[in-house]
Length: 317
Image (cartoon, rainbow, N blue to C red; front, top):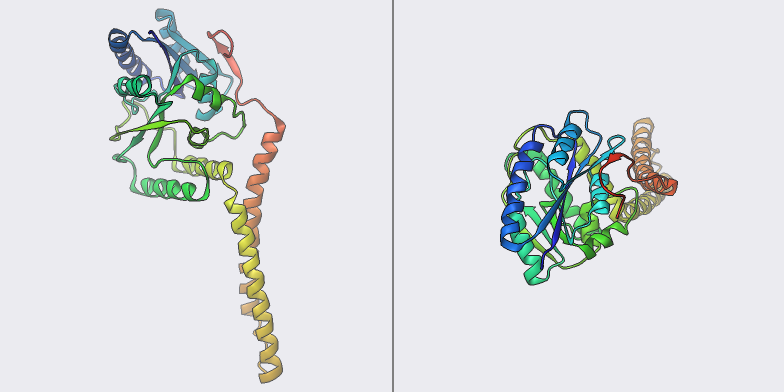
């Protein structure tokens, strides 16, 4: 039986790596065509690139009818690009890959075997090493995975990549989650389905530079925590309760010392320290609450996840 595999490739300023990626993925597609009689479609999502990414994609589409493209009106982020690609994909199976070849196309054959022969719904990848990454970035990444798995019900594997091959049923379940603030690593785990994990060593980009700075990754991790856990709200409540108990104990202590022993109440320095400490705690808790309110505010606006400027796909499927 012949299956169609949709390859979704989010692109943001990838003019250097796109030709290299295309050559490799086409060779892999031909190999799998000969082995399994599979057909392919390549959906490149231009996420508001400022270089010649779109021109390169268009030139590829002119010489290869399997190449489809979606171009956003501006940069909406990788999450929106993946969602748009899945919405336009018509394949029996759908894969998400980066254009920088850090996701080895050679793994597609093994992924396909697991899904068709062992009935997995998804075959995902994870890096066993973080070779080439700054140590501080790797440290915080590991801390994030440990934290979010403890405080949420989303099963997010340490080192998990967006690179995965999914069945049509799983893609449909993901598309039903239409929230504006998207965190796909959590969504993939939340929808469930039987997932097989493939491990591989980290590889460097073939060209260009990463678009993910430490600050962007930090904000992305906050989005993930807020999207899949309400524990921070509970923590702020617990902190407030504990501080009330501490304040009550201190008040009783001061009253007892003053009435029984005549000790004077500590003056200006201690008062300033207490005010600053409590103000900091309050602002911290307000900040947590504000994050949840801001996400709720954005969701209630019902803004589109992305806006398409031009495409050669026939509508969203």
